[in-house]
Amino acid sequence: MSGAELRVHDDALRANTAWFAERTGGRLMAVLKADAFGHGAVARSVVEAGATSIGVTSVAEALAVRASTPDVPVLSWLNPVDADFETAVRAEIDLAVPSTEILDAVSRAAARAGRTARVHLHVDLGMSRDGAAPDSWAALCTAATLLERHGTVRVVGVMGHMSCADRPDDPQNARERLLFSNAVRTARRRGLRGFTTHLAATAATITGVGDGHDLHRIGAGLFGIDPSSTSDVLVPTLSLTAPVVVTRMVRAGAGIGYGHDHVVDRATNLALLPLGYADGLPRAASERAEVQVRGRRRRVVGRFSMDMIVVDTGDDRLHPGETVTVFGRGAEGEPTVADWARWAGTIEHEIVTGIGPRVTRTHCGAEPGHAPAADTRETDSDGDTDTATATATDRQEPARA
Image (cartoon, rainbow, N blue to C red; front, side):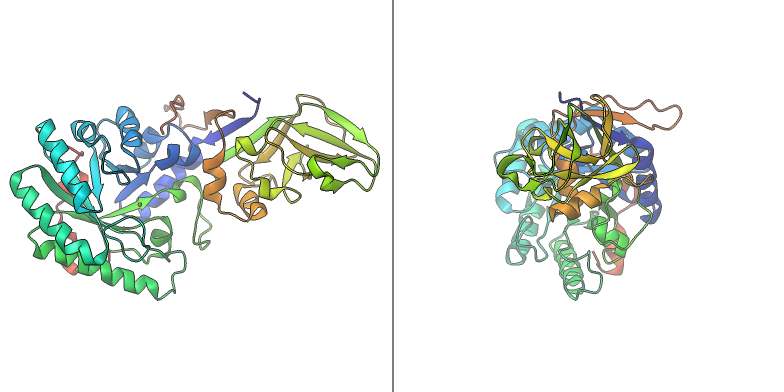
């Protein structure tokens, strides 16, 4: 371990979750993919704060979440055709299905397990990535209907994902809502009934362009990230600190790091921190990033190395072991994840999911009576008015076969 510490502020996570639970009327699926966006074991926290189900990508992620939340529906939506669907079905994991090939694989796995697999049919609305293409959607629905009759699958959801929800005035949003509405009608015409519909992720929920369906899949927003940049209610959930390893004074003209990208123009003090791009600090932020030292922002100078960065502390000579804030919640003027994303020319999601395993994770700020979870490294329509015909039982029941 490097001595660096990533603090997960459970109180902020719970507050964000509660806000989305209220915004969605309790129809909140907490998306905890990529080890909960780098936050670790937070499944219990989000459920206690109002999430009614959990979404992840792989079967492996779903099984990790299932271990800590045995009574909460869990959906896995990105798996290859040879994924361990049998284990998922036995563990009562819902599975998203974007093709007839994967539908057949899930059906065969369910038959081997002697159970009925719960599936969400996934339609591509224009992103050209996951989900069934529009010209194959009807065939997927027909195949699912036949397998329902055989008892190996039960369609419990229809899902899509919007490409431009962070821009609420983009006309693509209306097109994709219409495509999803048509997809839902097609599923019903093929004989499928009683399924939930879910279209909106974080941006579509905040802007409202994905409203009108049974679930909202919220990932980034739980962790204080608003992809639409239209709200001011979300609270950052991470703080990253690191100890000073060594300090030194250098004279004017001294070069710093590889290539001497930075040459100091005056005598100054430098502090070395044991964090680098191997720990998730983006190399693209070199010569732009800042950290907080003794209540003041100080510039990170020179090219980022794999294991270390150098801070110009000016007239302040720091002490070895002194703590430097790399980013935090911004309440005391420290840099935030949003600042680091801007300096690196990327998005906040990449910063929070990129912090590496050498950095110690600590959960803090749990509500009274809720001990912070031990970090076990746990590891997203506008339809017709009858879209909401799924019963309350269908919406809330655990993911049981």
